[in-house]
Image (cartoon, rainbow, N blue to C red; front, side, top):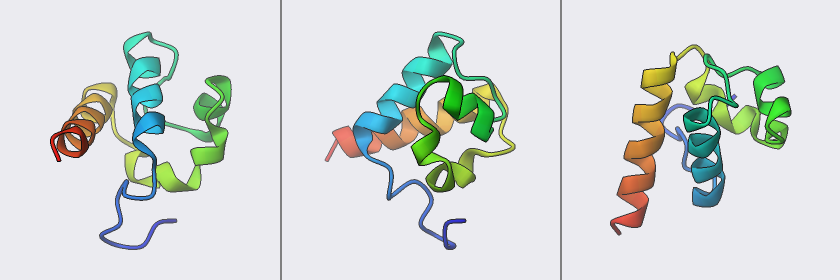
Length: 74
């Protein structure tokens, strides 16, 4: 599990975009589980995405959009 305060910092922006794309397409079910990640080919991110576990779809979308927007805006 990620340490406190790290959130999604270890996840590459391209991987966050792939996650958001999968959510938008209905391919990634929420709350995010290891099985759901495996189904979209992103199981390798399992430990890094503990921050998203337990969140419903609108919350996952909001987090991903906010993090991606913050990174792109730099």
